Amino acid sequence: MNERAEKRNYSRIANLAWAMKNLWRLDRNFVFFVIALVPVTVLIPLVKALFSRELIDAIGAGRAFGEAGLVAAGFCAGILALNLLSEALEDRCGARQYCPSEVYQTKMAEQVNYATDYENTERQDYQEIVGYANRDASWGDCSVEFLWGDLMLFFTHGLGIITYASLLTALNPLVLAAVALVSLLSYFTTRWQPAYYEKKKKEWEKEERKKGYIQGLSDDFARAKDIRLYGLEPWLDRMLRDYQAYILLWEKRCSLRGLWGSLLAGFLALFQNGIAYLVLIAQLLEGGITVGEFVFYFGLMESISSFLQEIVGDVAKLNTRGDKIACYRNLFDYPCRFHRGKGCPLPAAPVKIELRDVWYRYDGAEEDTLKGITLTIEGGESLALVGVNGAGKTTLIKLICGLYTPTKGEILVGGRRIQEYNIEEYYSLISAVFQEIRAVAFTVFEFVASAGMDRPDARIHQSPAFLLPVL
Image (cartoon, rainbow, N blue to C red; front, side, top):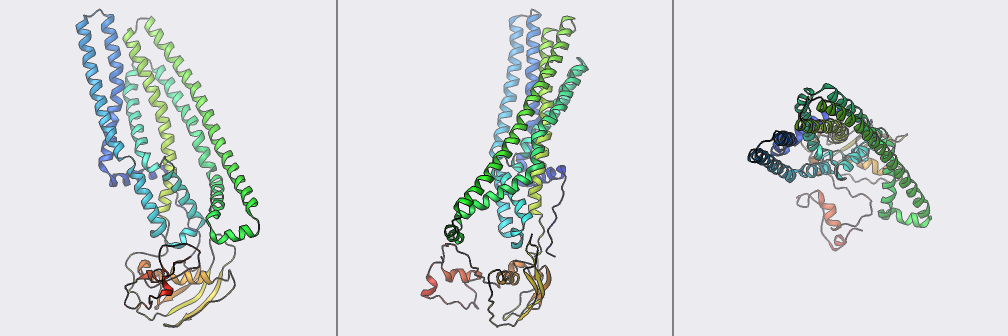
């Protein structure tokens, strides 16, 4: 029953759809403004290219100054209007941009601290999922936040390709074929670095967790005495430096792959522009196009080339986003063994507790900590558990408290299995004080009575001994 939970394998498209659906529920106006930006962004460079063509041909045809001025004024007014509209839409999007990451950070904190089983927080695979999701949400490039920006660019570039390709094909299909080929090859150069990251991230993430653990020892008062007593500072310092060196090596490898990908993309762009120049110059010299059309088509070629290369990058980014969003989904969908819906009524005091052949093994451990524990605690009975460190005393208490679930066997409280109760309601029956050294901002009385200081059956009496701060 306590087997390692399998991660669900979500497709990238399913992950993107999941994020879009959540953002639609969160802020529909944001979605509307993003979609409205798409046609406006496509029209602006097209209108500018048409402006250059019309103005150059008008001058070349010897039209009057006033007529050419009207053409220029009309296009300038149209471009100004489109730019103002684009800025207004971008402002609306920018005002809402950071809301999704804040919402997800809050939901993740709630999930980790309250909504999932306590036992999950100690599982290695759960910590790994939480680590990936936290880094993505907190390192300035949150997938669920910037996803819609990437999608807007993807649709913009897609619409631009359809629009401009229909115009460029009329000139010469060879130019379009060269642009498409270069863009296709650019996809692999763009994916080189992210693909390497996804392939090797488990090795890197493990070292990052080790480094974080060692750094956390500096704040652990319980271990500070042993570290000083046994002279472990140099050893821990060497380990920390080794982990930092490994992470730096990892970052260098990722950066080098990005550099080589950029250099190859530059050579491909040079090849593409060379073909375009040859075709356009040949058409111009043969009289197939005017000077204005030369400028117009070359502008189209540059725009569609940019769109094709960028849409390849968009696909690569969306693939990366989809992979990272899977961590959020794995976090929120991680299975819980205790339920928080309607449970059976809580038992009335005094409560009888029964442990029937209870076994428990910690995640990643090779042996069981508890083996075949059978015990009955009658209502009103007081019981003390004694034993050496590691004997399983705390583990047994956490099982009774509903923090852990048995690997095998069952625990009955008031004649019902703990899983039959609403776990949050069940916790109201428990007042547990675990042995951890922490400085807290309340008294022992307040801590012990935290399950409900106003309960009529609480047998806690405030006295001067209970007014000392917990150290």
